[in-house]
Amino acid sequence: MNPITEQAPSTLRHGFRGRAHRSRGSWTCTDLRAQSDAYRGTGGCSEENGGLGFRPAFRDADTGIVYPACFLDGNPAPFHLLDGLPNEVVVGRSECGRVTAVKGSLVSGFVRVGKFYTRDEAAAAVTNS
Image (cartoon, rainbow, N blue to C red; front, side):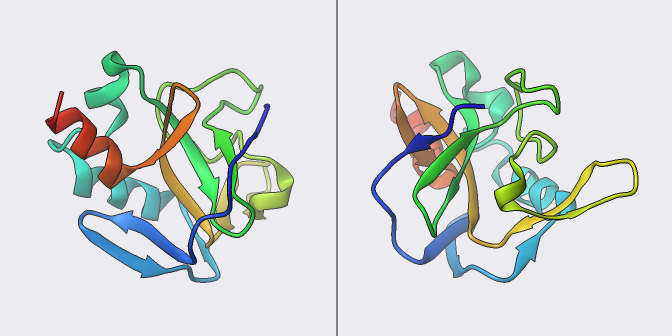
């Protein structure tokens, strides 16, 4: 995986539709599913914006590093998936090695033409297309 370095963003994290909130200690696959559910129908989900060149990714709000969503083997994933994230952002794994929790500073979003978009920003871009 080749992370993309961007300028460090603010300490606010956009995780759920229309609402920014401060990062907490960690979040899980359940939280990721809730984010996807909250954005369904807005253009803020992979299945709704992939045709416009958006690729699922995560940005670490602490470092500004963007990590493309990948499968465990490093191949690009067509949807948000925690298993391919590097150890430096993983805070919990199951006995079989699956990621169970990641740093609370991670923001799920998308990369398009080298720029990171939060789910809100991606939804707005899809709406304006």
